[in-house]
Image 1 (spheres, one colour):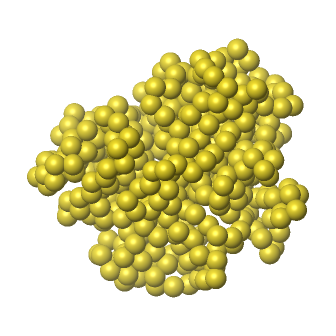
Image 2 (tube, rainbow, N blue to C red):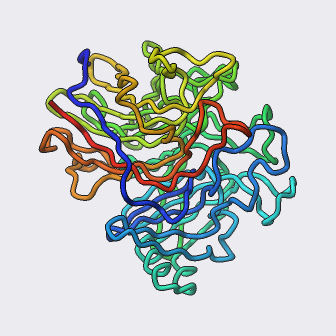
Length: 431
């Protein structure tokens, strides 16, 4: 990888806003409209032992549809049959064509803040995106209910992992099963696995086939394993060999309650077990938690670029502009850093934009980057922009949507956090 990037990212506040802030949601698009499912309508969860760490009052119990062109929005209560599982936070989700698959997630299954009601949902749900959006816009509750199909399967009882699709297979990457009310210092059961399977959905019946689970190739478990991760970024990629794959970035928690710095590369091999490689030669410094991300591939150099926007980091900029690691008094702080992870045949490199080229606020955590319409994508990919086909020196590539807005490096009673309503425009800028 070169010493400097051939581009940088600029982010500016848009004139458009969501009708309400939401974070840690599932997301899909159809016909130019955006669909938000589940998540939270408050900020970062409290970390003190509390019966109300994830209060049900702030669970997002409505399906939200937003038109980014007109700024109009529509909402509808979730059907009662799916209320708990689809108002969960930190679900894993992926849109495949017109179907949004939603897996697991955490929340209360009784609509109350009763300790015994909290846990991780053992569900896989399919939403017919166009039909759901049409039903929400029309206020048609019967059509809405008939556009959702859900099954119970404990293999999907996961929160804080990531769901992606490569080729014919879906990959449910890491995460945890948290089986009780949340309490700081109490860990859930981390899956420490990459779970691979096929999904069948004909609009009425949802099936799972060819399921396999792959653990740490070294056989390590617990915090000794590099697979002991949750709240991470797992991004679609073109590998140095030119094939589709996945990159695993960051995530938490290590034995000392820090974040994971070595990436893991997942390279599918058809029906054979995928190659899982921990890159011990590279250490990521910034943006460990799940955050908005932009993917671009430059075929002329074989370079895969993954840009991470803010969130929660290890390194951060001090008020004097010095990039330093978080210590005991500022562990894993919220950050406004924009960083790009580049990978090619000669290795992986992290490009951290200077302080004056950061985000305009402490945003990005548990947010989504929604691509601008009409962007050229790499053939066969879901969301990788073809860098070689971008035209112009300053190109609008998307919007940072939702997520958490912090007011300080560390959240507290005097430093509150909020769900983000404002949209932020993202530009690729080249000389």
